[in-house]
Length: 363
Ligand SMILES: C[S@@+](CC[C@H](N)C(=O)[O-])C[C@H]1O[C@@H](n2cnc3c(N)ncnc32)[C@H](O)[C@@H]1O
Image (cartoon, rainbow, N blue to C red; front, side, top):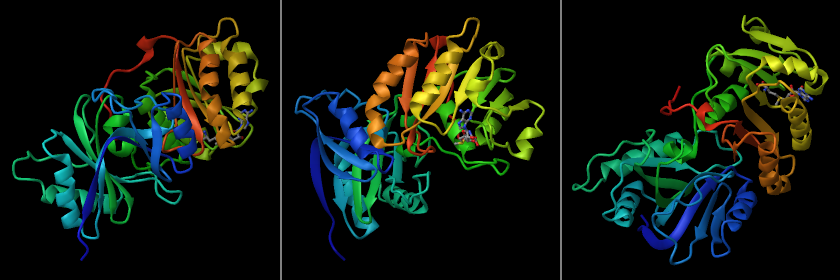
């Protein structure tokens, strides 16, 4: 059996992202400050060297678009036996107080959306089995409360773990790996159900039962179902066919056409607009702008999926956000959700009061 070795790597930060998004993430971080340098990187995992005087209290890039989770790096552990690796982990943590342990696998192009794989859970159990006797028991891979410190163990390669910690502040940072996740419900007609569910959790938009919502690009209907399951009345606009079960829902209406074909005054009936059309971002933004700037259209919040048909479109995200602000949506945020593909989700609200206050839930 090989012995384990660990390397201290302060001051470093780590970030995980969708596999393929590393360059977009590095470019985003470079805009934060020229003193931060990208260091070790693998698909779905990037470390950054911070300036020596980087304040310890500063969370590293909490509102990143492309990072799923970020934190301070404590070092890496190389081992071929979980038991000896566990001792190295606790040596790196030293006397730092933590409230949770999150253990998960970095995203690879083949990995499932849920980063808490059976292997990650098993390693987490081993870490807890070797918890130093002077430490209180820790919950494993549970959703943390705001303000709690989380010990992160990222399985980067077999036998190579990166250890870090972060304080839960926004919703994703409370989940293992920053991935808001649940199992796909049996009745869901497409995986877009999970995407809409995660977007609602992340954005906190107060789309509630009885609200009227229009979706551009609704077929076959998974995301409409996630809204219908909340009691929302949904009108789906899409030239393609909806799934029969969605069509049969009493609160669903299908308009078989493109978004730009419906008379704009018809949008006066809706409070919320969501879009998931497989077109270029400019096309989605042009269509939505025509709708929400039309007199009397009261749409108070948006959830827009913008497809990054090429990764270099990532550089335009700040411009897209500014454009949406110019329509009167003062609170605009963007994030690449783990449940989506090569795309970002933008949440926009006219007023902050349109944000739901509540706890993250698994279902
Ligand atoms: C990714 S799929 C949408 C998935 C859907 N949200 C779900 O939950 O199953 C993209 C959809 O956009 C539709 N689409 C493309 N251009 C459109 C447009 N201009 N207006 C409305 N829908 C459009 C396509 O027909 C396709 O069904």
